[in-house]
Amino acid sequence: MIEKRIALLGATGSIGRQALEVIEATPELSVCALASGSQPLDELAARHGVEHVQTGGDLTELLERAKPDLVLNAVVGFAGVRATLWALERGVTLALANKESLVAAGDLALEAWKRGGGLLLPVDSEHSAVFQLLDGRAPRAIDSVVLTASGGPFRNRSGVELESVTVEEALAHPTWSMGPKITVDSATLANKGLELVEAHYLFGLEYERIEVVIHPSSVIHALVRLRDGASLAHLGYPDMRVPISYALTFPDRRATPVPGLDFSRGLVLELEPPDPERFPLLALAREAGERGGTYPCAFNAANEVAVAAFLGRRIRFTEIAAVVAEALAGVEGTPARDLEELEAADAEARRLASGRLAAA
Ligand SMILES: NC(=O)c1ccc[n+]([C@@H]2O[C@H](COP(=O)([O-])OP(=O)(O)OC[C@H]3O[C@@H](n4cnc5c(N)ncnc54)[C@H](OP(=O)(O)O)[C@@H]3O)[C@@H](O)[C@H]2O)c1
Image 1: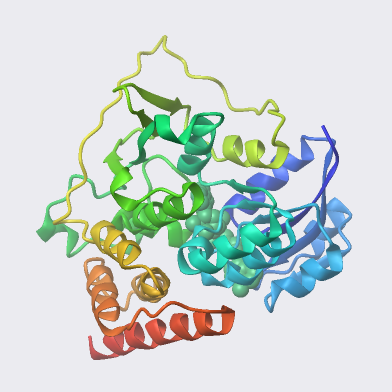
Image 2: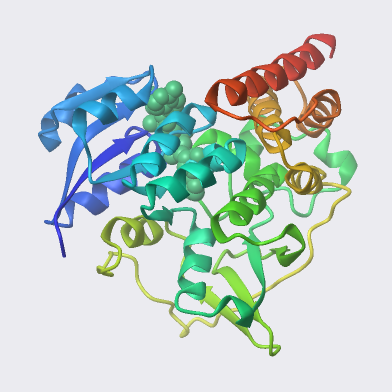
């Protein structure tokens, strides 16, 4: 395997910490840059012998200094946009966990990716699975893709019960251990909505060819339906070290500490359709994606504002969707021609969502 110098953005987070574990176990991988939002990085930098470190600010300055072979973008939220565009524009391999950047900046990212001509490797487990299932397959053989969703901790709660769920309950995810924002997104299904848009841009698929199905045990990560009626599935225990390792060691495939499936205890695979009534953010994301322009950016921005307000105990769980719906209704959604216009669209959606919060 060739040696790779990695810029790890979001090093202090859930993905960041698991990535460091993978890197430590792989001699050809080293860290050349570390970034966080506010937590200090001195200890991590000393342990991994990293020269280039940055906390907050414009992450492209760090990337310019470090000149990595691979950028692992594991920042949470819109804050990851500049780094995503930087890597795509320059043809530097991008291992992408920060789905929000591809959702918000999808059209700009595709243009930059085309110009840069580098690799874009999804770290999201579902997209990593689809990437592997599509590998080497003729586009004409593909009918559609299916993303699985655990359904989160509130899968069986009634609409009335959802009104009073607490932050602690929302943060107790049944199958994945993740940062707080994506954990809440998993509980509202906004995460699967973001992933729909992410899949549209990553794989060039129209929205009607991307399906979502609830699968509580998270063993099937995704399926690809072929034209002849067959479906291929990607299975494994839910553990992000597998897709992280896949992206960092691509095209090699290295061993991880994660065991293969154990059938001796039996394995039940339950699948059911999502409920749009109780989890409206999934349909809202699909609609924003289909409308295109800066609607997905606005969806993401309003959702970030609403999730932060829920985590800060300023709104109820069910109000997250209401804030996003109202913000989407208020934006124009005109396409962004450059990063400046995109940042303006993001700011406008945040303003609308914050206004709705103030009125609540
Ligand atoms: N966790 C998972 O299993 C999982 C799975 C699939 C996809 N993802 C995606 O991966 C991304 C990270 O998720 P996570 O669960 O690892 O989140 P997390 O645990 O909350 O970590 C977020 C990381 O981003 C950093 N950060 C925040 N704002 C920043 C800024 N302005 N500039 C630089 N760094 C900043 C944080 O630094 P501080 O610690 O200093 O705040 C932290 O290192 C998200 O986009 C998420 O959707 C996560």
